[in-house]
Image (cartoon, rainbow, N blue to C red; front, top):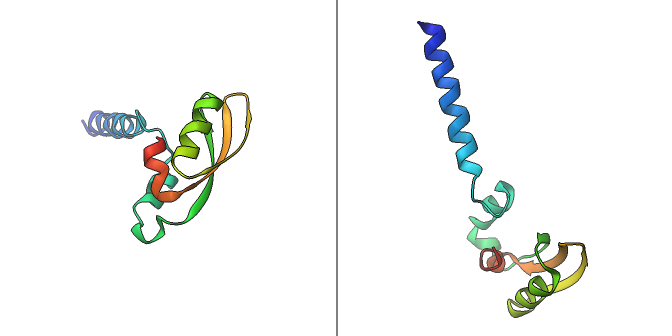
Length: 87
């Protein structure tokens, strides 16, 4: 009985953990930094996946700096407060 309950509990925890990651466009570390409202004016460097011309246009519109691209990965600098608009 305990074995079945333990297996059910482990399955539940794994499915909840996996579901929590679906649909997020940024990693958990960056999401955590966004919750600190005192640091939203801080400028950070990011690697962004997407078509380079489109990324460049959006980053410049948000007041950031587009550095370079390698394939579909672009290196940018952006205010932390503007990151969610990019995502």
